Amino acid sequence: MATSFKEWPWPLQALFYLGLAVVVVLAAFYVPGSPLASVRSQLESAQTEMKPLEADVESLRVYKQRRAELQSDMDALQKQLATLQTIVPEDKQADQFILMVQRAAATSGVTIRTLTAQAVSQQQYYFEMPFEIDADGPYYSVLDFFSRIGRLSRIINVGNLKLSSLGGHNSGSKFRVAPGTSVNGDFTITTFFTGSAEQQVSASQKKPAKAKR
Image (cartoon, rainbow, N blue to C red; front, side, top):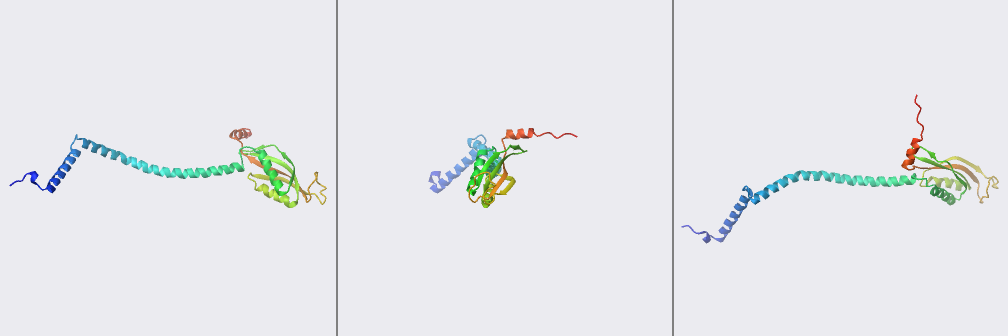
């Protein structure tokens, strides 16, 4: 004898309703024209479009890492450039340079009698700025002065060096000298600067052209 659905045990009723819900949901997903089927189609389409985007994102991660490396290299180059601009500045900075030389002389116990600026010489990529110096002091103080000159922040060349002894009574000096002074020196110190871009172009344009054979 058949029993009605209401007389079924409640676990069977719950299982029946669960199965019915699954059937309805699956039908809604796969029956053409249903809203859920449309959403499912859009979801599959979005997933298909997302795959190449994920590949692009993965490739861009490599560029992101490379960008960090390039930024680090750029920072290092900026520091090197700042150091080079201190060693060979763009401008003459003649006043600062003279003060550096005079400070080195005073620290070493050397007296600079005259410091005369000479004509600036144009080279291909830089400019030379020479000074003629007449100085005197104790022998080891003069050596210390040249040593300090070599340790200054700017590049300096020393040339045309002429050292002479002042004798026991400093009779060879044109100036009144301090006790212990034994050496007089005449020499040329040359420092360098790059000049502006316009100055470099002007310097290159002033070079005479080679004669054609």
